[in-house]
Amino acid sequence: MSDNIIHVENLVKKYGDLAAVNDISFAVSTGEIFGFLGPNGAGKTTTINILCTLTRPTSGKAMIDGLDVVRQQSQVRQQIGLVFQDPSLDERLSGIQNMRFHALVYNVPGREREKRIEELLKMVDLWDKRNNEVRTYSGGMKRRLELARGLLHHPKVLFLDEPTLGLDPQTRNHIWEYVLDLRQREGTTIFLTTHYMDEADKADRIAIIDYGKLVAMDTPARLKEMVSKDIVSVKTENDARAAEEIRSRYQIEPRGNGNGLTFEVARGEEFLPVFLKEFGTRILSINLHRPSLEDVFLKLTGRQIRPEDVTNTFKAMVRAHGRRTRR
Amino acid sequence: MRHLLGVYIIWYRDLLRFWHDKMRLVGSVTLPLLFLFVFGSGLSGRMGALGPGVDFTKFMFPGIIGMTVLMSSFMAGVSVVWDREFGFLKEVLVSPVSRVAVSIGKTLGSATVALIQGIIILLLAPLLGISMSAGTVLALLGLMFLLAATMGSFGVLLATRIRSMEAFQAIMQMLMFPMIFLSGAFFPLQGLPAWMNVLVKINPATYGIAPLRQIMLGGGAGNPFAISLFGYTLSLWTNILILAGFGAVMVLLAMWSFSNQRN
Figure 1: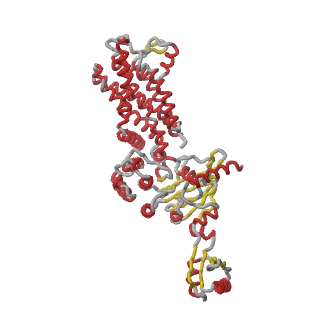
Figure 2: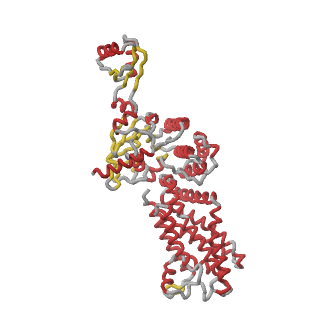
Figure 3: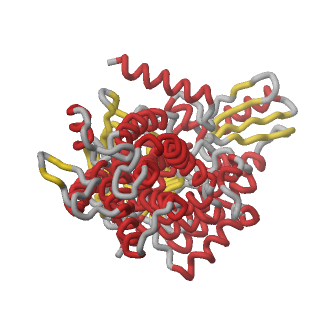
């Protein structure tokens, strides 16, 4: 318990009849990167809002660093940092004024303040524009400023709600380098929601939420194993003979598709070297497909995960509506 | 200490924003000046003296200052609605600064901006032939600030309960103009019809405008600018006390409402 910086027990949040969060429990240990995935409208943002004291839960308990998010709000707020999905900048102030406001509000010590602000603004490539009013920034620039601001006070727990949505790969890399470095140096715990699977893969553990309930929670590797084995596709000189050899040698039934064979094995990365060495039929090409988090997500929720767009939002609305009328 | 710092930061941001938007200043003093010079020049001749050596323009002047301060501080609550709409309120609400500190900071921010605008109008006093001692000016500034803080917290209180910008503006106009018109800013409060007299006396702004006028234009014995309540003539200090009492209630309500608002 003492190692768990986030501790959630039987958390419920109802809006009228609709349970946006329906009895979830989990714990996150200090320094962990915890991925919180789910389709839009599944309850991710509601959970984050409860954890960061913006929303009161209907029932259940949530603690951050041993502090109750309902009864010890102001202490909790000092421990956490947030990068919101929706914009939360003061558009009439300049970039650097937004940063300074944040630094003052979070009590970043004077000597550190200007140094960190410069470092972060340079990281997100906004140092040259620091004195321009934020309303003149493009969408991507605002997003970057928001991120830099969230990192400014070195919180114990950093909530990143779709932090890099719509950013170019280079900036995303920069930001991740900084976040990982911050974790290394300060032991920051990171609570992440994302639609980018390469980002989710950086998580130590992933929880998947759907219709307000946790449907899975484990390391990315184990989640993937759960879904399917690794798939090997080979093209050989003689597919019929190769199929026969696979059957007799490994007791696996390969599928032919007229253009090579596919079959499933448990640990593809260990299987391949052995296979290549001992297989009798000449191989023309070989390919290993390992299940991705995308596959995990699809299997568990029946939906694809992808960055938010209009169709998704619409689907989420329809789903929410369906949930309401079902009972 | 922590709380004071929070109040200061919230206040400072409001002033920064005000500074970035200096054109607001021109807009906010135009209407009061229009009232002062159009009505003043148009009606002064016919109204005659409203007090010893006080024509209608002079009579209106403290009322116009009160109007400027009241309008500006009351409307400043819009920044809370604005912040909510643009998401910045979330950044504030999730920060360690307490809600109480935020609401006080907002109120003081509104009040300071309103005070600056009131001072700009006050600077016109010599043009109207009104001379004041330094003590009088200081007393006026204090009173203007009290009025501004009272109306500022009233504005913040409403802003915590009203979600949309359009609704906020509509409700503000609905409350603000009756408060200004029924405060004695534009006409003497003697011999009003009974229904109007009731409205004037329950209007908190009345108790801000009357002392402004008494301090600026002099009261003395048989004070022509004093107001009476239940047959008693109110002293300067009674006026101020009533205003301050209403202000204290507003500040407390704003603090409570700010702490208990939904997102």
